[in-house]
Length: 162
Image 1 (tube, rainbow, N blue to C red):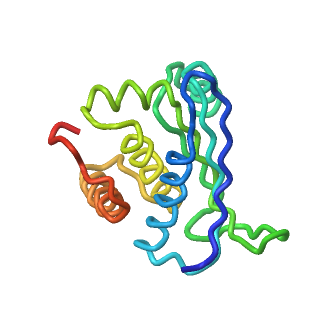
Image 2 (tube, rainbow, N blue to C red):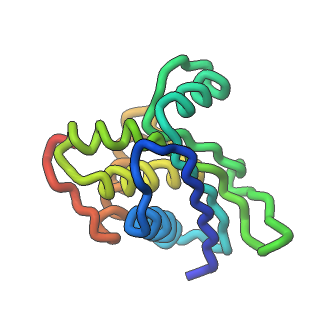
Image 3 (cartoon, one colour):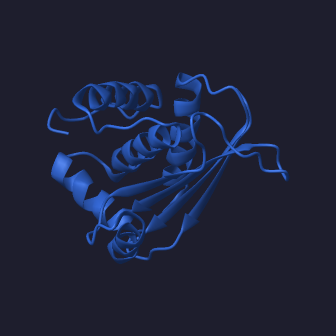
């Protein structure tokens, strides 16, 4: 495994982000890179926000005036990434997760917050690596990759409705 630097920032106050959640985020990032056979050292920034902040970001960057569960800001294009001169890692990008929405979705889907945060992290990591789900075939590929990574880190789907 190559070196992975995951910076986690908590910019919300509605839910305590404990060491377990931070560990899950790091494990999920690492698992996606392992599954995708990412060939180099990597860096990812993950920020936890509330619905108000993610709505503001969604409006600013995607012209969609609504909250969402996660936003991905890839820094690479076609597998080409800038390298951080301080640590030598390729800069994959930023992941922004709304904890408010993650809590609601965890309840709605009948699983724990840790599984939901793990799912959102894996989903977003795949976006940082260039995957998308706009077409049905692409969505199927992405969903299979998500489940493979989640199972590998012990976050197996708990119900059949998510």
